[in-house]
Image 1: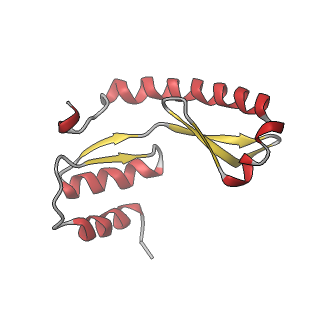
Image 2: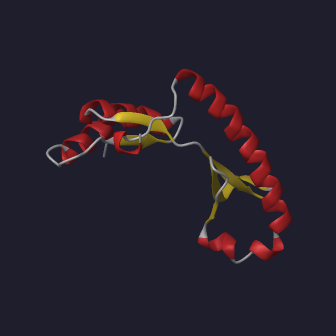
Length: 123
């Protein structure tokens, strides 16, 4: 077990040290993942960036995730939700739009502080 997220990141960095890495880039999910990602990036001498995504909430149960939507608008559904896709197509389209608005808002905030990172090979 880990004491906290920083401890988890340091242990992961120790496991990865010694591996050959070319222009390493750590991608972190905002909130708890950024703390872990920042420590990991520092320990590995890597760049850090965030991956902006949002949970797609189940109809009537906002804490239950049925999938996620990425910054580029792609939808990923869990295997249970895919069997109900035809019954919730309209809801899913609305939920996707709602979450993309929030992603855009957060993108402005995050990118104002730190521009998007790309691996040196992609530059």
